[in-house]
Length: 296
Image (cartoon, rainbow, N blue to C red; front, side, top):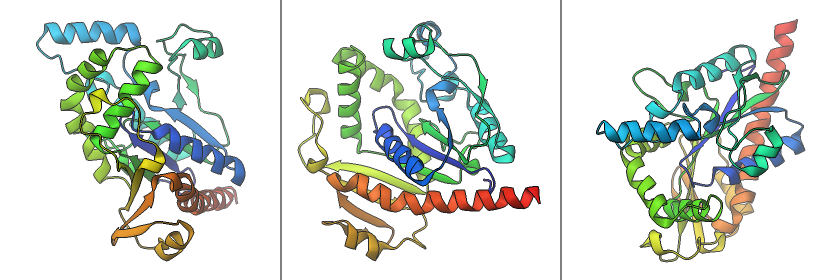
């Protein structure tokens, strides 16, 4: 952690909805005049698309078909931890981009499924913003969570997570239901060992819970809407959180535990604005003051 160069990380599984929170943070940054160095988790995958296919084939041939983007073998955990550490130390570091589709291919001038070259982060940013699978991952050799100043988990209940992944991968990536199901099954060991434990290290978790039947996610025809959901917001340390204020501002909210507030799904953006804005401003204000002290 760093007073002068804070790190904010959003961590969640594939299809969990981290992009929704990223959109909210973008609004907060623009409104509050905060400059961020944005890092995407898939930039720290070990293999490009062709390399991952080859790695899958080799893993299956050697009797280890569970290789997945959730686990350490397919990711650059040490390099990502070094980025967090270096940014916290002096506000620098390097990253790259993964080219997902034809639209990004035009943007970056490379084929989909490839990485752009490593480049330094922009200079003079207020904070580093990470969004991906492993913002709080910890293994025998790395501990990313200890470098993060604000750590947020996005954790829909598992059936909803699968529904969202199935719909995304079928509509945006052209995968069949069977292919997505195979991916879910193959990833399960890494999901249990490397994804789930992260949410015990986060400062705040957002868990969306549908109030419609999602018993069989593999035949669900649509994703439950925000109005068909509730969101459980859990604070690891509730001290300093003004729950009476949040309840007064968010109609239909209630406390389920001393550190958890439950809100209607349609109020998620409002809740995030109310919760994150003062936290971000405090981090940035402290960072700017620390930098001024460092120059004096």
